[in-house]
Length: 107
Image (tube, rainbow, N blue to C red; front, side, top):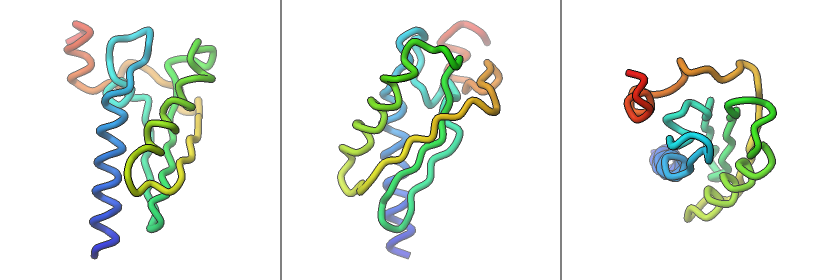
């Protein structure tokens, strides 16, 4: 039970960090933008994130995953961070949260 609580706490912290990380071209955080497909935290507090970018040729394709890895690695208790960058399924605007749509005036 304690391990489950630690995993939930760590996942919440990861989401909080992702919500403070922004795509430089769109003034919305990457979590609400829908770029994060999956977050997994194992019993050893290793974090695995499956994510995408708005386009494969996105100018931050090299730097954004590195920034995310560094910011999540700084969370107390996280032992390792693995970023899995995928383009299938491709990102589209329907993946954005209601908050993101409102922020961008699309709702």
